[in-house]
Amino acid sequence: MLDIVVIGGGQAGLSAAYHLSRRGLVPERDFIVLDANPGPGGAWRHRWPTLTLGAAHSIHDLPGMPLTSPDPSEPAAAVVERYYGGYEKEFGLPVHRPVRVQQVTSAGGGLPNSGELPLLRVGTDRGSWRTRLVINGTGTWDRPYWPHYPGRELFRGRELHTHDFCSVDDFRGQRVLVVGGGTSAVQFLLQLAGAGVQTAWSTRRPPEFTERPFDQEWGREVEKRVRERTARGLPPGSVVSVTALPLTPVYRQGIADGILVSRGPLASITADGVQFADGSTFAADAILWATGFRASLDHLAPLKLREPGGGIIVEDGVRVAKDPRVFLVGYGPSASTLGATRAGRAAALAAIEALGVPAL
Image (cartoon, rainbow, N blue to C red; front, top):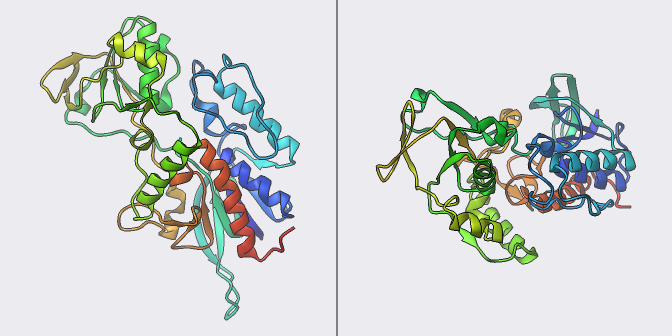
């Protein structure tokens, strides 16, 4: 039996594992880390090769080992894979991979009248573990969101999601519709246009660009807005709904060139393209759905953690209100890279307190 199983070897999971180890818990004896990926890097290892470190959202330091200053022209996936892999070795944090967690269930085992909670059983494709607590840091990459529009089943072209994007070279000589109002959509549009691809952009609402600097004060306000939503038992909204888009010089030029100008929401999809809400049409060879992701939490469904509104209420930012044996990191307010690092620490400290382990 283990004290803690950490699910997910990305930023939040590694941060939690670091703080567990620093406070006296021994990897492999007291806790383990499970990760579904074949190697280190978390969701970053799946990013398309043309997403360089300089073009990516900020990659925040893991605790105890700064990222330093890698080449901004290097693919972000390669940088993070190397960084996370080195981090695991530096701090002796063996990660079991690839291990896909299938479900977490109550396993019994609490002593009668002892006040101890029943144990949890973490079932995977590589066996199962019994544990007192779970710190879940599975992120969102495994749950791409595909919205439904009338006629979508009629479309004869190619459809793909951000999750599946590899290179603009796959679209040369084509007409591509990009759907979604976030950073990924904007970057896709600019890359496609740069390769001579004809594009159109669809967003449900007018794109919201902001000149406000993305500093720590901005980050705190974003987390506050997300926390207010999840505290009501609602699922987290899209990233762009709380962050907006930074109005960089490159984005300004894209607007001026007519690339980053939304044609509005879709009304329907046809065999050869789409019709917008204003009645105009666009003939498309491919539709790229940059429509975001949902929290990857299906394996926790047996514990019935969700509220009537569809979300999960977490107390102190990490502890699940409906089940004190479960801590969520990288969910809601902690879904950003900076928030995930802080949440990993908070979850580790809260879990240690729940175990009654003396502070070092």
